[in-house]
Length: 303
Image (tube, rainbow, N blue to C red; front, side, top):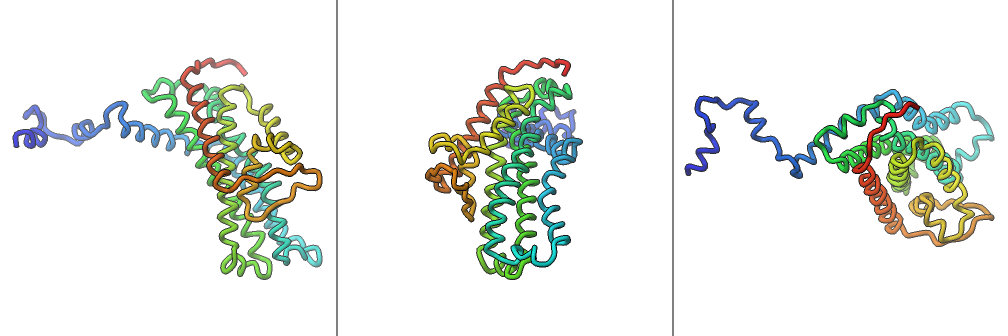
């Protein structure tokens, strides 16, 4: 009974209970799980503002809107027999899966977007000379890395997922039978599969470029090498194909895409293996980034 009363009455009767005292009393203990969640949420909130509304975000928005804008222009400016393929549902599915989604959205838009977002999560702070503010704060560096990665994933997933969905709808909605394909056929399941593939592409490429940002001063050269590796994955032997992100993403697409007569055949992983494999791969890279951040020394050099 006395213990219950002591929790309700201040220790010093002369000191009245105020909102400030109550807030201090309810503050999570340092190092507790509640405190880590609170710090992680604070990091994500600050980084989201820069990710969506910062100066560098303008290029990301333009990149994400490029494919829907081109598809919109195509509907307005292409006429006559040259639009025959737009009115063929089967050809529209092949056109979206190959040239639009895999060749344009995945290999160009999502790839370059992840370079710009994740490759600069740490590099940007170094260039802006603000990284030391994070390191001086009473938060674990591993938590900072996770917060930045989740923020980048949120920004990339929103922008490029929206770009994929808009491109898909602009491809199928205007054609005869397209609305029936979307509402009564497998259209919505295809849309979900393409958006999910885009999100997993952001997970994989994002983890790669986050890690490279800790080991290279500029992500440009390693990004160019990885871009070339992903581009020639169809020429790689089966064992080396497994070291390519696009190899796993292809197995998640609802419409198969042929790599051409020169491609070396390899067994595609099942969808569960592809999803779990990409998540484990990304988790390992984020863990490497967190380990690297623990021993990182801040050296602001003139660039």
